[in-house]
View 1 (tube, each protein chain N blue to C red):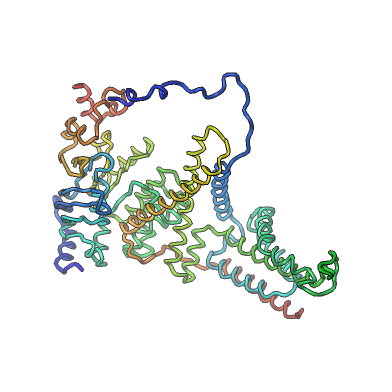
View 2: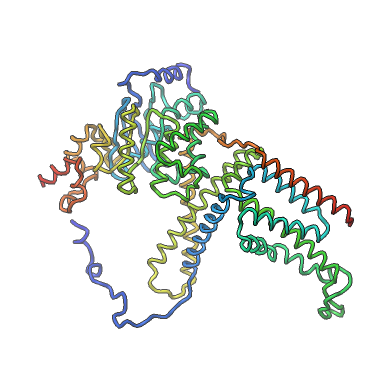
Length: 290
Length: 308
């Protein structure tokens, strides 16, 4: 059970200042089944309104950190504070604490099939608000508004198996946005999406950030990084944070990107794909150097 | 070092794929891989067809699902107590009329109902027509068995007709309900009828993920098909593949269930299922309830009047 002080600190976050620290992870270490390490002494602080990209190769611990930030996994060692209160398994068992935390943090999973589990799109989007105690009328209003915003109103009564990958991603995002969270966690948001849906999603993420939402994205897509993030946190393959800085600086550090397996030293010899992106100046620079 | 530099020589050489002489190979029948892929596609096709039928405008589609569930249950109970073939035939004819009024393809409806009859009732009905089980006047003699004459009796035929008509009418009522109600609305109706929400939630998720797992299995079979160049029958490798597919599907289902649970918890789920549905009874629902009540009353009344 959380102490009264914990809950008071948690609730005080509602009237927090713009530059307030919202997440603080300290020396977090986590292993799956106590055998497969995923986080190794990871420390990270996220401030309100930031766009943070967690960068790293497959299996480096990005998704695990997102799950820790969403209170789905708990570090074996170290601590995690959100909005001034420590987030632990015991604290989340408290209804008030759980509701407060879940309302403020939304998580868009990489696998939309896992996230879209209800019989219809409408019920899927309503799931979060209903669980957070909103009335049926208020929930219906939110479902309607979010569907209209994401242009999926015509899918309302569709079953998930009748949706394309892009549509499922939209529904997954809608189901999270309906809860109006302050922080949005995205796990590989642009993976397996066609270019048009990718572009739509990037615009949406930027819009959400401009409206004051804090964005944390786990990705290894370097092409969209300077648009999607104003801060990059780089993971090494031994599950540690090895760099933290603005995208420009990180993307110019070719040696770092090669060492964490985000860039292949041979990649520059091959044509055009990553070099044609208009925003990715660092790739042009590194290409010229090579 | 690049992957190309490490490639063995055979990998960079071309295989002789199609015979250059243009000869034609032996035709073969579809094996279990193809049949499974086709079967999976048919399941999906059926589900889409049912969804389409349920969403088209028709008599039953306009009735509130909860009202439909209750009235169909009442009609099923009435059907169960009827003891006269003529009444059951009349009820069956009524289900056909409702199917037509609901825009269901009549042949499809009849086929779906009668497909189950031989399976569910044949085992019981066929022996019951014989004088060995139901004594009476033999109308179709079949010969002798251990010195006894065996034949189909009039009483046996009447009993069999009664059972078949009752089963056909009951299945028709259930098919009418399921074909004219979208699955999600049916679940919502169960929730409004005080069926435990947790039970309905699990049922809904099971139905939703059947299609996902079906897709997974289809992918595995398609991957095997794409790598099968020689169609020599190999039963043991086939069995091993089916077992491996089943194992992999269980594994995937388990991993998926953990992910789904995380996704639910992330959106505030704490073990209480909640629903957005609320139904409003309108005039046509009242008319439907009245029509069903009159039908049930008339059925029971005539059944009583005709006696046993």
